[in-house]
Amino acid sequence: MTTATTASNSPARKDPWDLPDVSDLVVGVLGGTGDQGRGLAYRFARAGQKVIIGSRSAERAEAAAAELGRGVEGADNAECARRSDVVIVAVPWDGHRATLESLREELAGKLVVDCVNPLGFDKKGAYALKPEEGSAAEQAAALLPESRVAAAFHHLSAVLLQDETLEAIDTDVMVLGESRADTDVVQALAGRITGMRGVYAGRLRNAHQVESLVANLISVNRRYQAHAGLRVTDVQK
Amino acid sequence: MTTATTASNSPARKDPWDLPDVSDLVVGVLGGTGDQGRGLAYRFARAGQKVIIGSRSAERAEAAAAELGRGVEGADNAECARRSDVVIVAVPWDGHRATLESLREELAGKLVVDCVNPLGFDKKGAYALKPEEGSAAEQAAALLPESRVAAAFHHLSAVLLQDETLEAIDTDVMVLGESRADTDVVQALAGRITGMRGVYAGRLRNAHQVESLVANLISVNRRYQAHAGLRVTDVQK
Image 1 (spheres, chains in turn orange, yellow):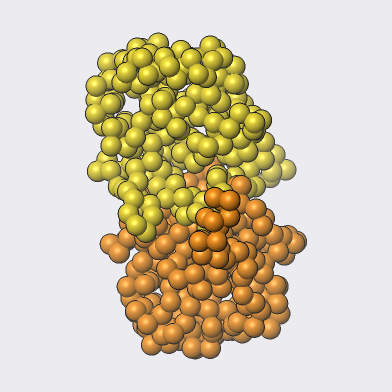
Image 2: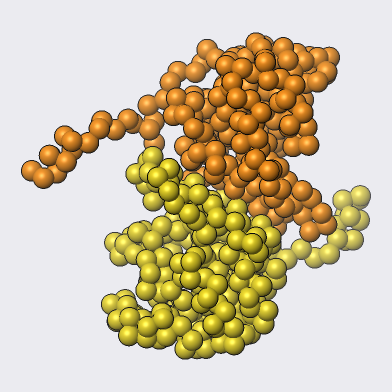
């Protein structure tokens, strides 16, 4: 009785796995000629998604796209941003600010998915860099007030992504953002890749630790000669 | 030929799963009357480890120990530290500095394992707090120059740890520290708990993101009504 009353007073709870159909969305990858970007482009194209690789040089982007096949196109970053519905930012951290600043108009109204990991390296290995905005994703949100910014795809091995003999990428993708509609789209995109699952993991103010955890995964890889990723336990689909 | 030459020039590589026997070590848990500490104490005792719960009040520690049974003892924090080989720090973050400062002598020469997550909470949920030393673990190292400090056991659900119907705790434990001998001991201890695996995940300078990732797991728990933990993929035992 008490339970029933409580339940009827609660708002209807949305199934966290009720995600939108994203198969028609065009996915752009800024920095798509780098290892991480190329690996993501390959996996999305293999999943049947329309993919446009962006680079500072249209020629290099077109060459990378031609290598990947599967209908992938290459373009300079501005055209990649303009023609895509969802734009993944996979540029090196030291080019992050300048790239996004230069694309503010083209990225207006787009869903921008930051997957950049701000790290420093010295002889002891990798360590976290703390952007003044808090994280790469929050920097993107500050630079792109007319875009919707989410963060995801931080913990993927570029080696595994690009390995054509691997059918599945068996990891979870932590997805962060301010709007459920946006994080649902990114989770659905992650779920298009065989083996991968997008898991909502908080707001952008909690992006720094997700980005910088890559420093720890680098230590794991070195100790275990692995290409480590993460699974979130006790989350059932 | 080339391969053989290279191999003979390389230093012998230690098997990362060749871990010491830790079954005789006495495990102390400072803050062992709290949910996290009590859960860890229960799991270690269930695994056959000798466990001493520490608290500011010896009486409360003894009461908690009596509830757990399995040979668990209770003592005030100072006696707990003195009598233990490995001391897990599971106090609330706001008592972290004062507790460790007051136990500097008792903790000298001990292996101290920090599992504290510095978090703030507001109406939007949990967020990372950044200790001036970089992390709770680095604060412990700064406060305890005569102890060996490691960090581990951050991502465990206190609910699952304390659930006596659960045979196994199916998660990995990220273990951080400066000395391989110390992190090996902590990994071995984690491995004593059924379902759990200790994975080396870097130096203490990379502890902040491991500690604060709990803010993300809290978001996961809320969205999926789960008790989320982590598994590191592609690391084979």
